[in-house]
Length: 85
Image (cartoon, rainbow, N blue to C red; front, side, top):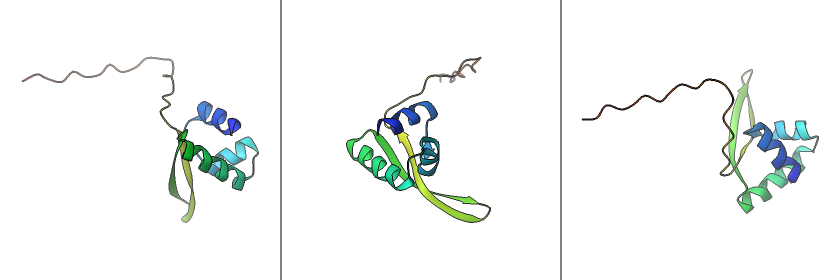
């Protein structure tokens, strides 16, 4: 499970199939581990259907619960101020 958490911290939101391919863990094992992590509250999981070349591909979309990645380097747009009435 630590391998999956480490990968998700580095990559952010991922599909279960992408996690399985990157970590070289069988897809069924990844799904079991993600279910356990979700039950513990470490990961947020939702069902996702993506259409690739017109064919539906179902999977689990996962992200770490309460984790906010650091901002990327570079210039950032300044927030616009709201006019006061």
